[in-house]
Length: 50
Image 1: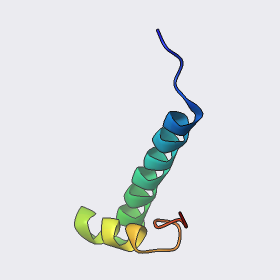
Image 2 (image 1 turned 180 degrees about the vertical axis):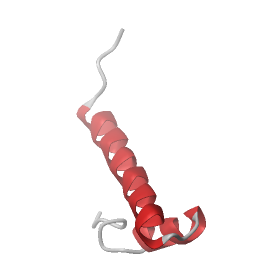
Image 3 (image 1 turned 30 degrees about the vertical axis):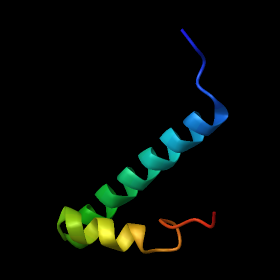
């Protein structure tokens, strides 16, 4: 089995962290998934500089 590349690991971790943030926003604010995703993905954390 091939080892994942550093890029693959970073992508996986980034996606995992963002999905956890969406869950936290939903729990904390009581909003739905679409609103929580919008809040996270339009925040400075959700759109890192490339």
